[in-house]
Image (cartoon, rainbow, N blue to C red; front, top):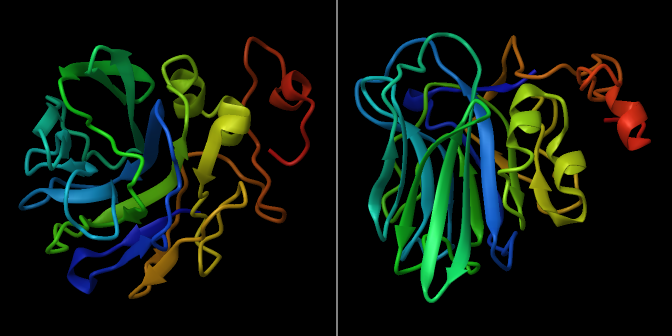
Length: 246
């Protein structure tokens, strides 16, 4: 099952300070669940650098329960209009790439659908980012701890536009969707400490004991922790990809 994070206990998980992705295009995302809007904005996914300065990408929920995505360079770059603190699992994702001529495009996705984009003359993402944090912001003054459940964060050196519907529906794992371009994927099933990177990268260190929750956004076999996705177009996932264990 996923991990439950409690803001009052400052519970979070964090990678060590090494670059996980090294080039654009880049995409990242995760699944999250909460029961009611927070009193003030809380962060469930952060990707920045070990100096805790400069730019970062951060995903959070406002006091209205709206998804918000922002970075230090451009401030808020997306705010939703739907209360997502409804006790259901939701998914969010971001992608950034160089369109040429010094113009960078960023697309935002929620629950498999494109929900907004922005062009910028400066980069919204930097390949020097070295720290992934789930459960709080990790700016110069770490704050905005999250009350709720988090699972399945991932990072890839590829745009996610063509695969995000499959990832968010559970038809494909991030590893299967991105292939050789996946750079990090943490199932966050709640049993491992530290939380291993399923594609052989950096593990997430757990702080202050986030606990195993009762639910998970996708289905895993309880005995083997192997992914049991649904079928796509009537064809079982394992048949589509010739894979065992996903």
